[in-house]
Length: 238
Image 1 (tube, rainbow, N blue to C red):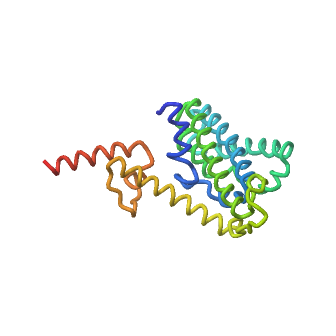
Image 2 (image 1 turned 90 degrees about the vertical axis):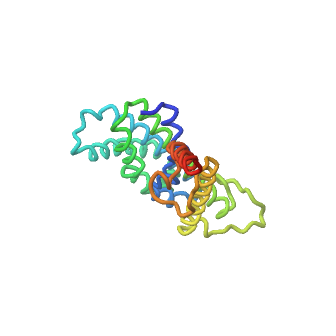
Image 3 (image 1 turned 90 degrees about the horizontal axis):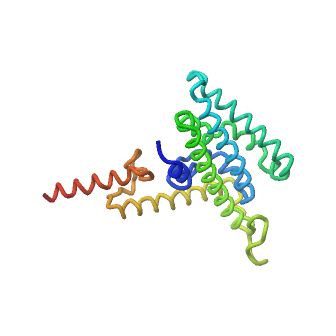
């Protein structure tokens, strides 16, 4: 059981859902044609994820294990209905742009994943920190990817022109293949930073990273592995 700060901050980089855990890629690829869409979808996910985590944590001891997934989905669905009603009332154009992906938040891997892996096993204050951190990390990811695609694919950012009249938009970026290309470049950049960070800690990292802790290098176990490697080197020299 970690502290509130550590549970909150892990979702901002170490376990950021789309780029580290590779979860929730359906809305990440589909709705990020603009920064506004990414921010709107992210805000909806923050609302659902944070509240669902808290509710599930509060009732975790009375939910039968055999029906826990169905209960998680029912809780998430109730919150998504509330989100839909709020968006229809206060942000209807955005609701129309996001379309079917708003109700699909119910079965988003991020929502169900955090419910099963964390909220169902931890107290409410940690569940809230986890949900809020993961939700903000998810929102930042969608907004960043949407910004890249909008700037280069339409020459605008949040609807405002960022280039002169001579700019020719690269329309490939706002199409489906452009989403995959942008996501791949972001993942490659994060892997590069991960390898660089591991090497700074004294780890010999193979470019062809293996699965598991030794390949991920994203959590605090990196320090333990680095210390073990240093001891092995000292033993070999002795």
